[in-house]
Image 1 (cartoon, rainbow, N blue to C red):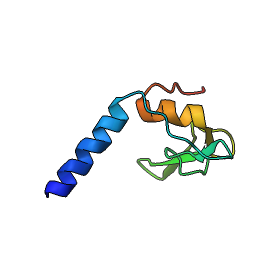
Image 2 (cartoon, rainbow, N blue to C red):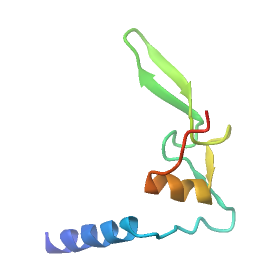
Image 3 (spheres, rainbow, N blue to C red):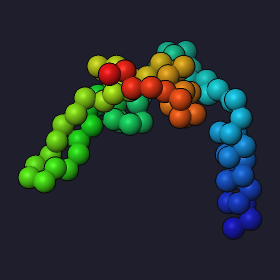
Image 4 (cartoon, rainbow, N blue to C red):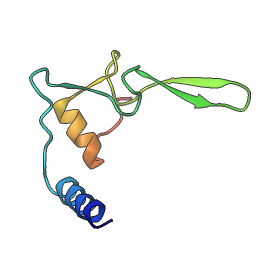
Length: 79
């Protein structure tokens, strides 16, 4: 329990600061909102509802800057 508490405190400290995550040489990350599909599937009253992801590009990726903004809660939807 103590280790988990320390890890949680460390994660909160990193995410609360102006820390930017390095996305590697490609500069792109799979969108965590749509899981890289570019589509968000919601359960409707009769069937599934398919919506285009408002954050990723048409291939389901975010740039490194967009990903860091998403983690901080400052990324605005594209449409």
